[in-house]
Image (cartoon, rainbow, N blue to C red; front, side):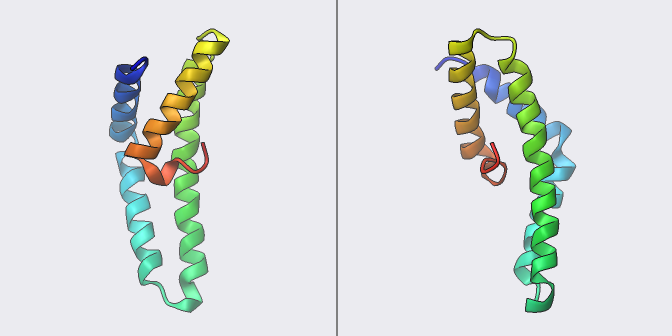
Length: 96
């Protein structure tokens, strides 16, 4: 599969560079799950902010590399990148 190795390395680097953010997302999701009715909305908003930060970083990685490719190759790369994020880092995939 074209771009598979590259995307695998990019996502591994993301996990390394943003490991604290990934952990914070997991903790925020647990806090939301445990929250009572009165604080659930606030906890969910905190979770979404963290997810958005991760998604933004992934979009930057994806778009920066895609900008170096010809249009057809860039479209294929973006589709494959988004698919792999959905498989490997699903909480960040919705905003791609």
